[in-house]
Image (tube, rainbow, N blue to C red; front, side, top):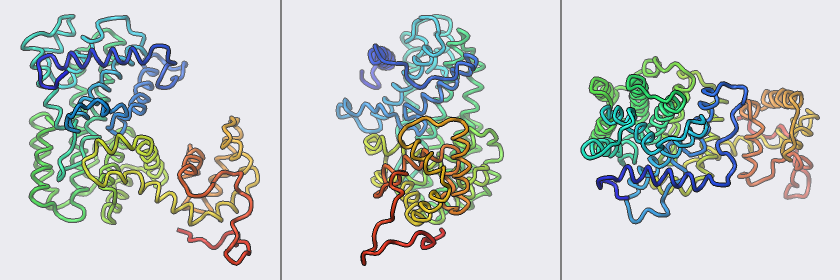
Length: 453
């Protein structure tokens, strides 16, 4: 399969379907087990979100990179093809989750891709059970190839749009797939509405990231040109493209109030999407300036996320990139991207180190919490009452040590246990014995010595 050669897209789809079938043979069902009490559509939608997470597309970087058989291709092309293969696998998996009747899966996936890239003629032919040949197939391939700019990487001087573009597109693809497999049809009008929504999401993302790029100083000529070129490469509707270009040009000279930029971002999912992408963009060079941190704090506030929620999102990102470091090294533009996630873990580590003995003391004094943490760390199940008691006591700890409030949030104990794996000391409850001796041989004081942060 050679990108740009006639028939390459069909070959890629068939290859990915075949690969998915081979990998699934004899394997347990993947992507979680959605609640059986939900409706088929709700289960499928929950399954879609889990797939987006499991495949790495939550952060725009497919975990099945295909780098091993890159064959000398540029990294951008390898990434583009890896994203497309992941789109195909998610489509096929959704057909399985929805228990769709056996059908011409390759044709159905091509239909979904045609709807995604706005090729109406191809989508209608495929939707009617036809087969794409000749000019129609070439037109679809060209439309998919045009997406390579927004899906395959970012210019050195531009915005980190790749992750957001991929995430937005996989959501549209997944919703279209659910309609196709649950109802047997995908009306063009429904696909077009989803595409319009996705275009607006991308436009807001461009506004937010453009402002982030300007918070320290006005961008230079090369950066401005690269950003405006990216706006064109997103292939948004003409009217939206022209208005977005005008807004971005104004941002180059004066960063607008964030409340104005995110005014129309209403759903929690959309708000989280914008915040996640801004956090990722701020870390692409492995560092964040004070101006960027102030901007991110203001953005989180405008999107109605508190500090504990932001910290939890950052830890999830750090965990993903820690597990998939090879993928990050292959696909990110900046040479400093190897540090992506290190700053997040570093900030968490700093908070724990500064308050370590106070943390030990507070957990000792709560009594039951030490027992429950030990049980959780050993992988033993907790009852509903025990989980409620543990959370209540973690909240008490957080009141005494505000810097550790994240551990009192829902799921916070999991963060504590996960963080212990990368810290240079043992945080497990079994280590809550005596503090290490001082150099003079005496015991360390038991708290009250640390920076309250």
